[in-house]
Length: 189
Image (cartoon, rainbow, N blue to C red; front, side, top):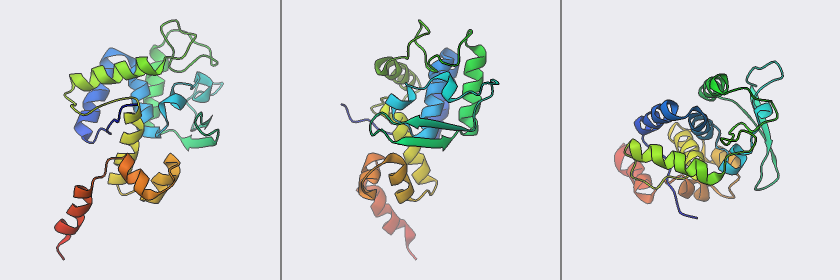
């Protein structure tokens, strides 16, 4: 597996959203839900409509999944941006059953594959001028990177990502020694 980076620039994130929203609402929804949930792509791609939509057709407040990698149950709230993306995507999607894949292939009855998601993300990233290596794992890393930059405790992120140590989480989200050194150099009390 190739090492990928988070998308650090919020303007690039917004540009990616704009690009994906204009070209494919499914891919837009995948991107928005991915960067706002921190789920592994294997878990994102296995979501069904019933995982996010109530029987009355309303987006749920929370998603509950069984993580593919470790078999643990994970429950988390759906952010406002994710809710809007899901609503817009399902509103424009042709008829569907709640048991169908959320991120359906063109055939409609199967989940898209990781390579399809990768192609969509890479195409949009190149179009908006992102030079870093981008992959499906970029979504999860972007979530963690921006949560950290907004002041979330590294041990909370470690727990969310199921990492064994804070140092692993820092390395995972791309916090470099130079960035850590900047703390010392810019504080200057």
